[in-house]
Image: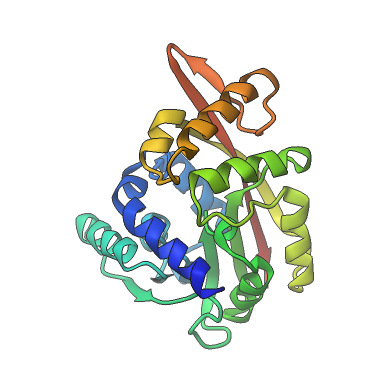
Length: 254
């Protein structure tokens, strides 16, 4: 990761820490439950949440796993994670501030290594997936949950997301996610897929695009109402425009 990209991530997620961590779609209990169940996690697992953000997924895993570690680059996000942990009365979590390439952990240290909504911010997601495999014990599970636009719509999707969040690098279509797993030495991952809902103005209110870019985004979404060229299933509810982000969930055994 370059210094400039690292600074962009810290800048964006320092400002997004509260609105991101309180967004209903990010905290959605049904989606969290689905991810935890899909992982197959149980009371004997030690979990690492890579780029854990405000700790929402880490806390969900902590309710069933033996121990959870969350690592993130942005101190403001980890402050939110500490707060959530306290609110939920969880004692089997620790948090580390740091980069994810390389991961500052020993080989085979965890039985489950996960990352949610982070890969689209990574300049080298394949290298990070390789690190996730390294710190996962043999027989353990590595899991990625991230945006996955259709291949023929990925360019438009990513163009809009870079306008919305300048720390966005590239959301990968599902075939590219699969290719990353294969290159990292995994067999074919188990997969599931869901949609992450958001209303456009709410999304913009918790994002920090550069001046003028919010209006450019509104124009792109308006055009997508006709052809869904962004792969976000845009639709109107009264005067509001609602979106539905495509999300892939992939899990492979080490």
